[in-house]
Image (cartoon, rainbow, N blue to C red; front, top):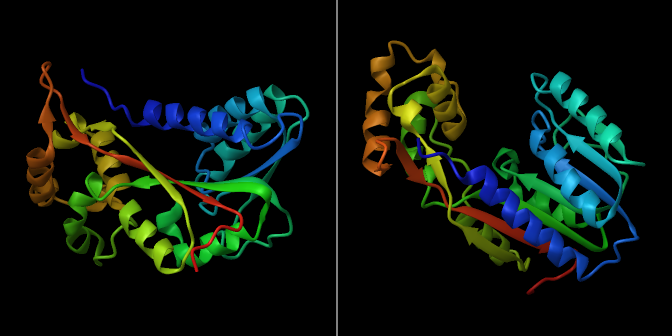
Length: 260
């Protein structure tokens, strides 16, 4: 069955990002990281390992306000400390806006979490003030050419039409505020076969896509307009599985660069 490529595409691009970091900072200098919206920490664990191969990773703060994820995230952070010599991790169980920011970081990550920010540009401006001199913010989010094509259904299933932030919208807002940035787009796909057949895992994936719990929509026939739209967007692989294009944007913002 054709598989989703988004996880491996994200990691490949992150490895390139780390390689570029090595060109502007010494590998011997201790590295501090803030991850905003860590979830259960699966990606943090993988990417911390990648960072530790190139830098002296000493400090990793994970911010996650969702109490459902906290127990698993605590276990993940403990594993990270066991696997990476000298690493100290800290868990912040609040939102980025409400966190008592008292530290500076060399790298701040917003991996598919910027859309939860009340005011993304304001929060990114705040995050820049937390960076060290050579620090960088890395924001990973969806392009409008991917899953956002389904956002018209938010008003029907979620009760409001507030869509998730797209990369194009974020970059336009950063331009308006004179915050210079670099953006790279990478091609990726998501397998939606289980979504179209309304299998439990597929409904969970759709819920993640639309930022609402579609398991509460009963009867499931109410989901058919969404499924039909999904099928229209999907491409069928040789083995019969269905996938949609999901371009991913990697937006880099540095400490002090502005265009105003």
